[in-house]
Image 1 (cartoon, rainbow, N blue to C red):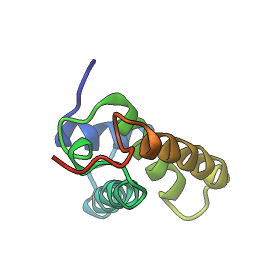
Image 2: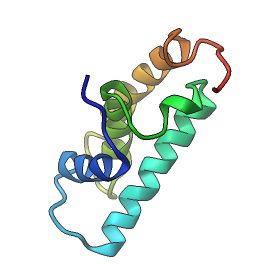
Image 3: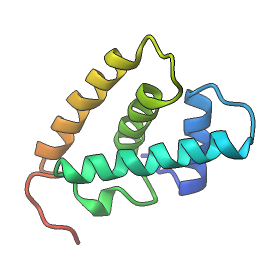
Length: 105
């Protein structure tokens, strides 16, 4: 399994959102969305220890969906992407590997 660092996660999120600039405002918005996604997953019952670097692919996928759904102002796919994120969020929260009522380590 390929795991991702914080820096690689940001670059991945830039790529999935088709961002090619290092504009401070855009990068700051993406960083804020990444942190919001992790907080949202945590509030839903995903264990905190899986929400830190190195990230595994399913956590990266959830963060990607969240950022794609919430980045920018006029996103016609926002609702569909958020529904996909919510579905994955529930599966993560109830799984024994990522949530399932286990306490953080």
